[in-house]
Length: 478
Image 1: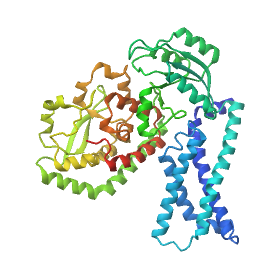
Image 2: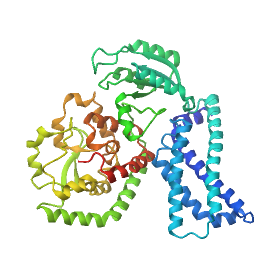
Image 3: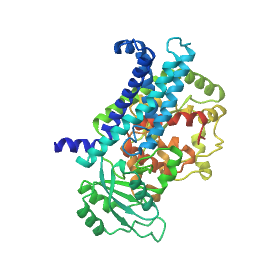
Image 4: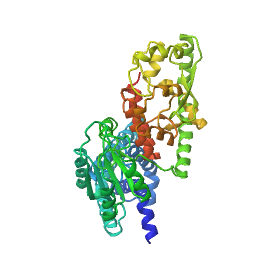
C-alpha cells in the first residue's frame, strides 16, 4: 500500500493530467447524451452514439487540444480551481466557435438548434458538478494519505517571500503546506549572495521534514548552491522563485504554483519514455509542417534567388552552450552573401547583451529577407534539423558558435547557463513567445531553465499554440 501511495505522490501531476483529460471527455459525452435524449427521447444509447458520435468525437478532440493549448492540463496541480475553470471556459468557447463554423460551412441540416443549444448549456453545469466532486476526493486523499500535498519550507528575502507565502496559503487546495519560514536580510548590494545560515536550514529540515524547499531570491549566482547540495542529499525537492521570472511571465501567461513562476536550478535526466514521446511528436509535427508549407518554401526559394546572388539556404554552426557540440543549422538566407564577413564591423551596434547579437535595422538584410524574418519564415528549413534529430520543435534556442566569444563571466549565472544543454535545441520556446529580440540574454537563459525543468508534451503543445499568434503578428522579430 505504501509503495502505491509513494508512486502516486511522485507522479501526481502526470496522474492528474491524465485523469483530467478522461474526465473532460466523459463530461462532453454525458452532455451530448443528455441533450440527445431530451431532443429525441425514443433513441437508445447505441442510437445516440450512432447519430451523434462523429460530432462528439470532433468536439472532444477540439476541446482537449484547446485545453492543452491554454495550459489547463499542465497546471492541473498548481493552479486554483477558479483560474483553471476560466481557462477551460476559453477552450470551450474556442471549441464551440470551430464546431458552429464547420456546421455552418457544411450547411448542417441534421443537428437541430435545440440539441446544440442544450448540449452547450449542459456541459458547463456538468463540469462544475463533476470537478467539485473530484476536488473533494483529492482533499480527502491528501488528508488521509498525503497524496498531492507538499510540506513546504520557504526561504528568502522580502517582499517576494511574503508574496510567495501568501499565494500558497490563499490556495490550500494546491497542496503546498507551509510548515516553516526562514527570512534572510536584504543583501547590501545588488547581486550579493543570499545570507542564510546553513545551521538554520538544517534545524528546520530536522524539525519539519519537508518535501519541498522554495527559495525566493533575485540573485541566481550561487546564492543557494550549498543549501541545494544539502537538499539533494536529503531528497528534498528545491524550487526557486525569482522576480525576474515574474516580470517575464506577464508576457507569456505561463504559471506554476498559484500564479507564481518558479524553476529548479538542477534537473535530472528526463525519463526515457518522455524522450521517446517527444521525438515521435517532433517527427510527426515536422513532417506535417513540411508537407503543408512546401509551396511556400518554393516561393521563398525563388524570391531569394531572384533578388540577390548567393545560396538559397544559409547554414551556420550553432550550439546551446559554449562547451556543447555544434551542429549545422539551416535557415533561408535573409541577408546579402557577404553578411557574415561584415558582422565584426557591426558589433558596436548590437542592441542586446550577452551572447546575443541583434540589430533592429540590420543593413545586411535583403528586401525578401526583411519580410521573411518579420514572420519567422526564414526559420522553416529548421524542420529538416528536427527530422535529422539535431533539434526539437520546442526547446532552448541555439546560438551561433562564434557568438560565445561575446559571453562575459557574469552572464553564466553561476554555471546555470550551461544547463541549457540538458535539453535538445528547439525551433521555438519561451524566449520566442515572450518577445524574442525584445528579451535580453539573461532573461532568455531564465526562460530556458524554466522550460527544461517543466518540459513535457503538454508544455510543448502549449508553447506551439502561443507561437502561432507571435509569428503571425511578428512580435519582437527583427
